[in-house]
Length: 374
Image (tube, rainbow, N blue to C red):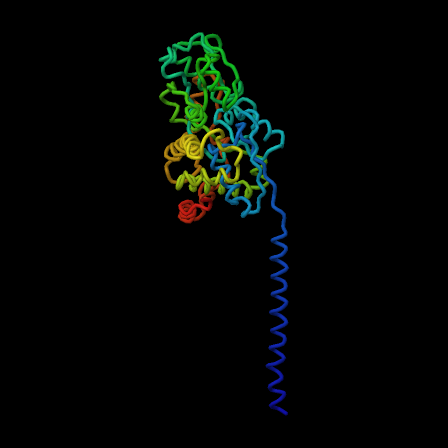
């Protein structure tokens, strides 16, 4: 009897333990189920372009590779026109982030008092004025009296072009005419038929013009490549209300940058799989691939230049020194009438750039080299 009672006690403890284990397991399953059912937080990014082609890998690859989704965010990337339109969409509350030219970020703060903040620096000034290589225009001064085609009359590169013309003894408001020609075939046709005598566009856009058969001469100021340009930005109120979201979105962009650098051709294939309508049409597969690789290389080169300019260690790093340089340039060029400390419009999360680079870069490179899309 004592033996039986002694034996019953371990059985009782075992039964209780089993109940506890089952309860814990049930609780875990309920928690996991709840976590899986938790809706993704919606985030919108406005981009200063009309077409999300392969030239925006830090914004398109995180969608195609589910980087942001894995972190709990349902992100929508919206092409909205030029940088000013992207800023307007963010200020109006229609977007949480905006991809802008650096000049637009600075003018927003210095001129309009809009608290737009620099989240990442994604490129340098890679704009150029291009003319037909075998045409009569050999020097920027030859543009006097000519018409220049631009993406839109609000595009960020106009400010730098005006400064460049002033440096060469011209009055940009009197000596040249500007006409909006959009993107794609219209600017190519406008230059080819002499409706415009030059085009002012960023490097990846110029690559598409060359893909279309134009042989171009590039005119640009020697110091443009020393200034930060394409800037991922948000408003201070967004940083204050959800800093974790800002970090997660920037981290996904940093991961995508590493992916694209590691295997540009895979980045192109991944982009096509997600955005098939952006694939060049009217040409065979090999030619389409070559066109988009040219386009993408122009942007990756600019991203690499920005990375090196900012120290070559942290992807997306934006420095006070770099933005001070371009702000001073804008002041000297009379693009702004005053300055403020560049630290005012830099993101103010301590250790932010170290945080957004906290991912397994080697694993990202391995994934790119293996390539999920064949």
